[in-house]
Every structure is written in C-alpha cells, then in structure tokens.
Amino acid sequence: MQNLLLSLPVVGKWLSSRPMLLRVVENISWLSLDKVLRLGVGLFVGVWVARYLGPAGYGMLNYAVAFVTLFSALATLGLDQIVVRELVHSPENEGKLVGTSFFLKLMGGVIVLFLATFTAFFVHRGDGKTILMIFFVSLGMVAQAFLAIDFFFQSKILSKYTVIAQNTAFFVVSLLRVFLILMRLSVEWFAMMSLFEACIAGIFLVFFYNRKGGHISNWKFDGEMAKKLLYHSWPLILSSVAISLYMRVDQVMIRNMLGEKEVGWYSAAVSLTEVWYFIPGVIASSVFPALVEAKKIGEKIYRERARQMLWLLAGVAVFMALPISLLSKSIVQVLFGDAYRASGGVLRLYVWASVFVFLGVGSSYLLVVEGLEKFSFLRTCVGVVVNVFFNGVLIKTMGLIGAGIATVIGQGVVFLFLFLSKKTKWIPLSLVGLEKK
Image (cartoon, rainbow, N blue to C red):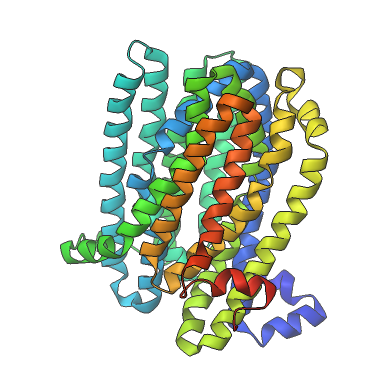
C-alpha cells in the first residue's frame, strides 16, 4: 500500500518528506480497504439474509443485536482511545497496558453476558427463542476481549494487521451465513455468527501480535494500571452506554410499540446507512496519534489538523447522504424487494443522521485529546434523553418515520451541545472558520 502511494510521482515526493502523514495515509488506506471489502460482501450477504428471513425474522435478529448492544459498553469499557494514548506516551509499558486491557475487557464481556441474558428472562419471559438469541449474541462480547491487541497496532499506526485478522474472520463467517441460508436453517443459527467471528479474529490477532514482537506471555494484569485506566475511561464507559442507547433504543422501542416486522423494515433502512459508519472511525482513529503529537507541539497546528479532520468528515457524510436520500425507495426496492417497501421512506430521512454521526465521532476523539471525557459523557446523556423522548412521542404519532426523525434530532443535539462550553465551542465553530473569535 505504501509502495503504491510512493509510486505516484507528485504524491510520492510530497508524502516522502512527511513520514508521519505517510503513515496516517497508509493506515487510513488499510482500514478503508477493510471496510470497503466488508461493505461489498456484507451488503450482499446481509441483503440475502434479510430476504431469506423476511421482515419478521430479520427484525427478531436485529432486535437481539440491539438488545445486547444496550449493554455492550460494559465490554468495551471505553478503553480504546485511552489505552492508545497511553501506549503512544509510554510504549515501555506495553505488556501491562495490553494485558490489563485484555483482562478488563474479558471481565466486562462476562458481565454483559450475564446482564443481557438475565434481563431478557424478565423482559421476554416465556419467549425462549428471543432469550436464546440474546444469549448467543452476548457470547460474542466475551470473545471480543482479544481486540485489546488492536490497541497496540493502533498506537504503532499498523492497523493493517487488525484489518487482515478481522477480514479473514468476516469472510469465513459470511460463507457460514450463506451456508445457513442454503441449508434453510432457523434464525437462531444466525445469532451465533457474532461469536464465531470474534473467535476467529482473536486467533489471527494473536498470531500477528506475535509476529510483530509482542508476546502474550509478557501480559500482566496490574491493579494500579487498571484503576488508572478505569479512572480515565469511566466517563467514556458511561458515554458509550449512552451512545448504545441512542443508537439502538429506537429498535427496542419499535419492537415493543409496533412489532417485529416493523423492526425488520426499520433495520433494513438502518443497515443501508450504518454500513458507511466505518468511515469516521477509520479517519479519526488514524489521525488520533497525530493529533496527540500536535497538541504537544502547539495549539495552532493542533486546531488546524482538527479543523481539516472535521471538514473531511462533514464532506464525506453529505456526499454519501444526498444520493441515498434521493434514491432511497429505488435502492430499497432493488436490494430488499417488495416485502421491505416500507423501508424506503425511513431511509430517506434516517440517512441524514450520518452527518451528525460523522462529526460526533470526530469531536469525541478531540474531547479525549483535550481530556474532556466527562463532557463527552454529559453531551451523550443529553442526546439519549432527547432521542428517547422524541422516539416515544413520534413513533406513536408517525410510526417508523417518526423514529427516523427522532434519530436525526438526537444526533444533532449531541454535536451542537459543544456550543455550550467555552472549552469546546471552537470545535463546531472551526467548521465555519470562526474558532478564533
């Protein structure tokens, strides 16, 4: 990938004199390759699964995923940016940082498994199929502990190894999903696929970690390190809980207020929008180490890099949302068929939430650089309250369209909340070149 960039005369000469930028561009290229491959294969297989299961079965599967997602922050523990930041500052503590992160994520995954399944018993008493599916999806959260290795690769801007590991797992599981369709198996089998994917990705991550000089035998759980990481990450944990709520609570509310078939229609529209949500994460995570370094160099260069990142995120989001919104009904008709016709109107509105999602992801990374994790949690909580309120009101009066509108409003509030603090208002102002005023 790097050789391909350097082979372009003008671009290669310019990038060669900027080694950090070259590493960032290469990292973005690898992460983008990962997601583009997933986009193509995942969309094809995902649509096939949706057609096979029908709106009701597809709604049941997505409801199980949404239900577990409400607890998923307890598995990730908000450690991603915190650990990467610590590895950039103190690479000599790699064994303690990665090892402690692994054990924290493992314990978090077990907690998610227990809480999600236990809650499902009470919420869906007598519905054994839904409880079993939630249990299978929850098991995948336990296996995701090995993603702690990705922190090491992110800190070195070597995400290509994570890309290869996760893509291998993804393609294997995609083939398994096709096999399930051809064998005409029930929806419960599809709920197990997240567990298989996490396990396969974990095996390959360990392999590449050893190839790059890391050794699991060097991992150590350090109690003081764990306290330090959790002290810095607890606002992000709570923020992630809030994010999970406003990203998935709509599907949970639709299921309980309207039905499983309606969840299937809504999920089809969501899938065509969220399939692009990898982009802000790819860009922001690749630029993040450079932003940390720029902050140490000086405020001017740091804010300039931040502004460039936000402009890029906003531009990509609008470029993506506009054609999808205009062609929403045709897109749904071609991909999902007549059974999902109701998804077209939802997609036309829901896709515009991506503009605020992209900006929200970018601003979240900036808040970590600024050490404002608590503010990040606060603004997300406000977004949750707004989202739940408008979902409750608009789903009753407008059905699925109301849920789409509520999501756009909630995501917009999360980003615009930055205006309410002197320390953060420069972030949205930088989009219009007014951050110095």
